[in-house]
Amino acid sequence: FLGVCRTALGTGKFDEAAEIADRAGARLAEIRDAYRSLVLRRRTTEASIAEVEGWGFDAREARGILQDARRLLEAGDYGAAGTRLDEARQSAKGLRETHRAIADRIHTMRGSVASMRSIDPASAREAEDLLSRAEGLLGEGRYRACEEDLELASLLLVDAEAARSARPA
Image 1: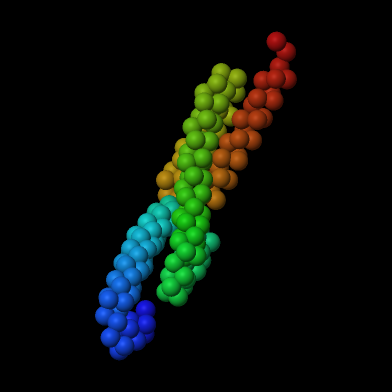
Image 2: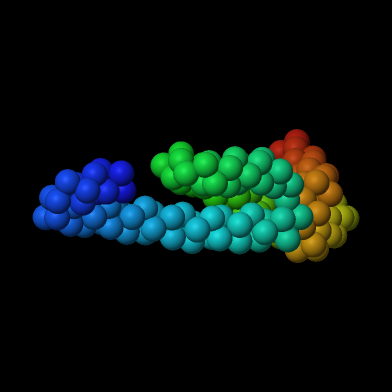
C-alpha cells in the first residue's frame, strides 16, 4: 500500500493517494482488531490451562498446542493461530470435564455404598473409606491415586453386589 501511495503522490494523483491511504488504514484497523482478539483468546486459553494444571492434571498437550499458536501469532498467521488457540482451550476443557466426571462418579458410588450397608457392613465401610480418600485426592489434584481408590471401591461394590445376588431369596 505504501509504495503504491508514494507512486500516486509522486505523479500528482492526490485523490488516488488519499483513497489508497484510507484503504491501508482500514486494513490496519482490521489487523489490529484481529490481533487484539487473539491476545484475549490466548490469555483465556492460558488461564484455562493454568486452572487444570492447578488441579494436578498433566496439561503438556494443551501447552504444546498453545506454544504452536504463539509461534503462528508471531509469524502473523492469525487464522491458524486462532484455530490452535481454540484447540488448546478445548484440550484444557477436556481435562476439566474429567475432573467433573470423577466427582460425579464418587457421588454415584456413595449411593451404592449406602444401599450395600445392610448386606455387607464391613465392605460398605471399607468402600466408604476409599471414596472419602478418593474425594480428598481429587481435591488435591492427585488423579491417578484417586482413580486407584475408585477402582478398589468399585471392586468392593461389585463383590458385595455379587454376594447379594448369590444369596437365596
